[in-house]
Image: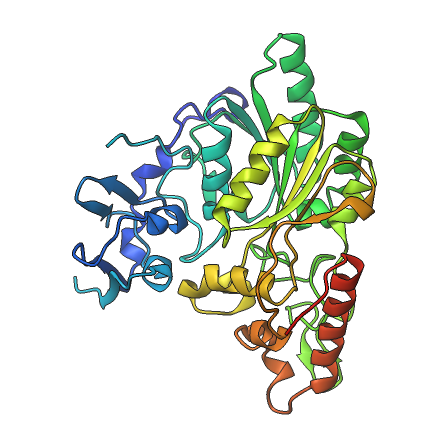
Length: 86
Length: 299
């Protein structure tokens, strides 16, 4: 691997190349009927892998580590953690 | 629906349930893309900047353990010389890089009056090297270098009052915040970036690995720390500690036991024998601190 001068990394956000989703043992699943779109889950997700969509929050499972914060903090119990099956 | 660009990207290697990325995302959301960051050795650096990748979408300089503040000072002076007054400079550091190793550089930065926001992400020990105690570790905490045992209650010293130390430099803005209160944290970042001079933000970031709790309880622990009075959210303009404004007062203050018993690092206070004396000491310290802050406790 070529090291740049001063070890300058010129690829911002390149950590996206690494898919942390494989760390997961539990998988959050959103029940959009219960969701009130308060976006608390988006705010409190350590991975920043929950995005705002018209129909509600959407989780990017490529990066979700399955920590469970979104399900634990959801005021409306709209997120449940399921056992990950691969 | 428009999607704002995340300035701290997915794919970083923080433990599941780590609260540092949550804090950083909130801070960067408020600061915006016109920001230059500096970072010193610590969890945040290890998880976000593994060569050849980086999770940061803002220009970031990685400094040595002690000098996040010094490097930020240089960046700030250079920006001022270039006439770019609208660019924010934020120095990130962990508790080790602030309380212990970087205190001298931080003090210098505050004294010289650079327009920098210094953010201390405090997880109360050296977590990425294996949970060694540091001067931000609270009394009664079991770490790998202050282990609890028959003759030891764990850490036997108080946490260093870093907020008061920084405020004593008579800087324009000092505040504490935590991830459980996003609006409070963001408001403080906004205020800190608006002042003309140095500001210090002390953010409590619960650590599932080092505090030994389940990963989903991160935000709950941060909230408990505030509701029990272990970590008081306040802000201060200027150097007079009498002017401290407490920004979050829970309706009822919970006993510290509620906070302690949720964490494996305090397990020795409950099993095999309940150490009521230590728990009471921690409670007394909290009560004393609240009285000093002028808070009357109603239960």
